[in-house]
Length: 318
Ligand code: SAM
Image 1 (cartoon, protein in one colour):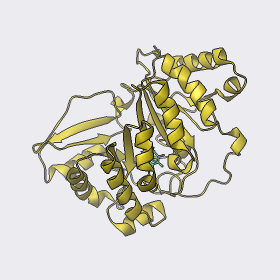
Image 2 (image 1 turned 45 degrees about the vertical axis):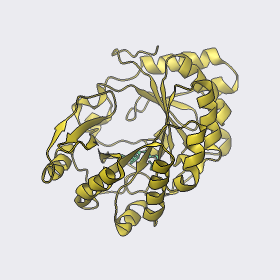
Image 3 (image 1 turned 180 degrees about the vertical axis):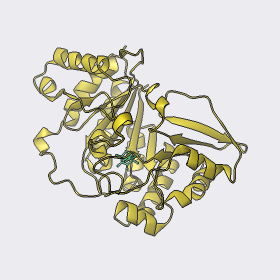
Image 4 (image 1 turned 90 degrees about the vertical axis):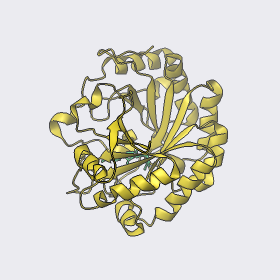
């Protein structure tokens, strides 16, 4: 079992399979990066699998594939199948912008994917287009419908930005409720790559807007990054509040980037690379790096002091 120095059990890895993305969301990648990582620096699925097998043997139970946009990488379903075949009980999840889900959802489900989180930042085509800098809404909505249809467990994620989409919180909540899926409202996390001047909306403001129409009570906290609430009618929604002091207490995750960096924390600049060890077939060394990363996982993220991250979300996978 992987246990860090603060007694947190690390049983969850988020894997960014590619840094590339087909959206240019204002809060994440508003400008195309100057240079993409050359292909030879990116781990192959086989190399990622070698490492993940080790992590699974050490007690990892949940793997979430993310990016960039994970569905831009070819044959993602084959990678999911490799993981599923290794251990059927793995909690296999995906985070996507939904653009290619209509075409891919069925294959992914058949390969062993269980859950999918889909980013949905607006229900107004022009606002969605302003945020993603591309006309995306129709395809995303079709992707959500297809994921539900093929039986994936769906959650929606909305990054709330003052003056951009904060007036849509109730509409988004009601849309999600009608679809029978959970929505989570995420506080925008300030970072150097984001479009300048975006205003984060704190969870208390989000909850106040919802409280204007619905009575709700907080549910007991689990070890996910969210706080969940239930309306009197029984609908469950969540908020993700990285600005809160409690955010790191229940953190059970580490991150692997497409280039092999193993990152103990989203807002912590230290990282370790497993690529060399994996490419040399030195599993012992990769296992040592994994244990080192877990041991050095910080109690809290650095960002709580600086309030602006230098790391790109499309590299760490958010
Ligand atoms: N392309 C996929 C997507 O759109 O969901 C996966 C990658 S994206 C980096 C993963 C998550 O990070 C998304 O839910 C996105 O909303 C979130 N994210 C990215 N930048 C963020 C920021 N500055 N603040 C809060 N959440 C952010």
